Image 1 (cartoon, rainbow, N blue to C red):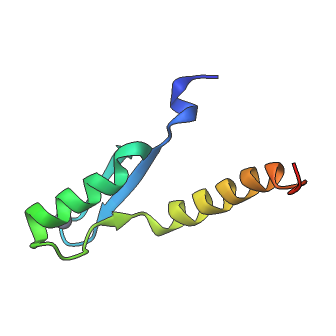
Image 2: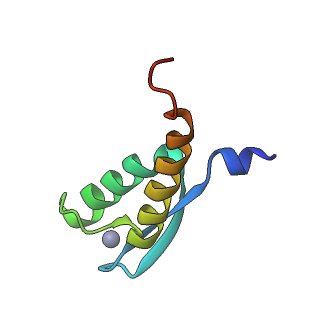
Length: 73
Ligand SMILES: [Zn+2]
């Protein structure tokens, strides 16, 4: 296992700038906010790639589900 697998990079897309940037997972919220503040007057233009966000949420949900088997522990 590598550190990269622990901390996946998340694609942030901005339709206005036509950019797609890989951002470390831990920094993704800040990166999106910074981009929108600096380039779009705070409008929520840039966002995490919706497809990736879906897949990630799904994956995280399933991983957490593994630990939720016994809620009494
Ligand atoms: Zn932009």
